Length: 395
Image (cartoon, rainbow, N blue to C red):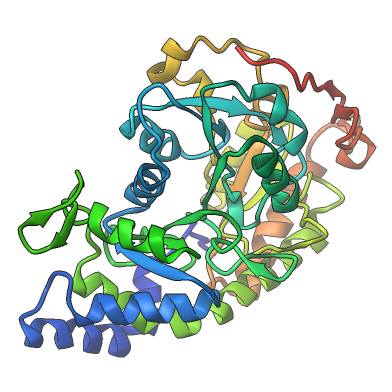
């Protein structure tokens, strides 16, 4: 049996008629940029989120950039963000000219640790950007309270959390802005790059509409500087065709995650869902002290796995100029040595999931009986799996 990490070809085949119809409709219209399909998708996604406004743009990276730009973030400013994220998150901050300041994660949830935020705030801090990683949100009440206390903007990086909720509130609706990615492998993906920004403010919405289109208030009249970042009509039509299925796909991901967790919780560290969260499992990420050996073993059985992400941003060569040292973010550095992402997409069959589970159990049966069982490791609190957390370390 083969178990790919994802299967976009199968996804297209299952929804081919709807997607082909949407694409053909755009081609027949002769209208390809800033047209009715984009307007429809923006309205549809607003309805899905249940509040506010949505502005389509060219990518998830651009969505973050536009949100930060609308917060007037620029050179000399600092943005608090986690290092345990895809580097495009950091690229977007740098696009504004601002400096990322890294906050450690809550190790069991992989999201921003509110207890590490205030130690990182300086007179230059302009915004906080929690990354809603793997499919669930950070502790937004705590983060928003800190932001209000210090008069800071908050931008949710929702690239992996379309449809996730926190205390019943949709990811992307709780902060000043939500930045979404529709990269093809996301829970709802375009057939190319695409993104969107959400906001509850009409003033913010009007500014975003101008920013994404050269700063134009109307054609050839530019009220501010801007960029070219527009979600094209074909991608918008494809997204509208898929949006009605997003909740169904997310629920299937949750079923797969439960099947994984039920079978694996005794042999590896399985994901934890926050008590206030509805986790939509963009990724299913386990921890093991034998990562490389496990990944090789699974590959021999034709099971594809990946690591999201092996090198945290503060340890990347590109950001050496920020002068972070090993040990600056202990929880982040610990988990990035142990995490493995298992196959996760709605079309996975129960038989495939069971094969992955049994293969991981077979791997551990073959290891030394002296191997430490995850359940015996210290849980997150004063220590994280036995590693002390210093919440005041910065650079």
